[in-house]
Length: 112
Length: 191
Image (cartoon, rainbow over all chains, first blue to last red; front, side, top):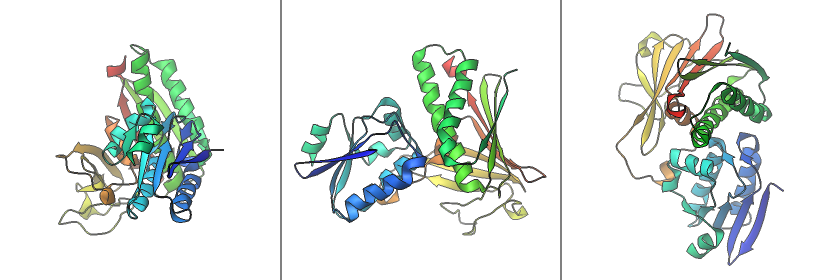
């Protein structure tokens, strides 16, 4: 399963089980994320990237689309456990300025 | 002989293969100073090649992509060729004298030597200079830092990543309508 969803204290955690989160999966990921926001009406979302070794800009673009959608209904997406190349990508794209990034899931849950 | 040429069907599922070949080429040709330098270089390179190849597949309207790798004077050179529809200049922000339109080659004479903004965020802009009917040069410039508002942040970063992680990025359409993207990445800081 590429995306594993768990619920804890009203927070939805999506664990990405892909080593490379890239353009070839972006369509299915975006549909999956939008379904959680639009149809399941989840507003507090954590993206667990601990298994991801590399992300490209298409995948990040989908995450940004999700963030724009969820913030318009007063929700948020927070990201946790970034491996160094993934963290580098958040820095290069300046997305660390708009996403709250945590070292572990529990801190992210507590921050909502 | 350092040069290698790869012909790949223009399909998005080939992107990991292309990335792996690009890494393998670099590892076999470059003697890195240490493991950290190698990791840093490979991270940059992967970002570049994912953006280059995926954009050629998604926007190139072609069935085959040719990729050349070479090491020349402390630079890794990547040259991508495809028989496509040409690079479309589509500004994200207009200067006062510019029209709200997009351009395919041959680019009209009135825009030669003009610069168009193809990407804008709170810290960077990517400019594309029109060098002639069928030639462009891209560069990333730093801006005075602004606040990043969620609704204004871009969702497409390809051209910014390619230009900020390389020393040279240009485009040319040949007389027989082959689109050629040429990129140079310095290896000096990593060896």
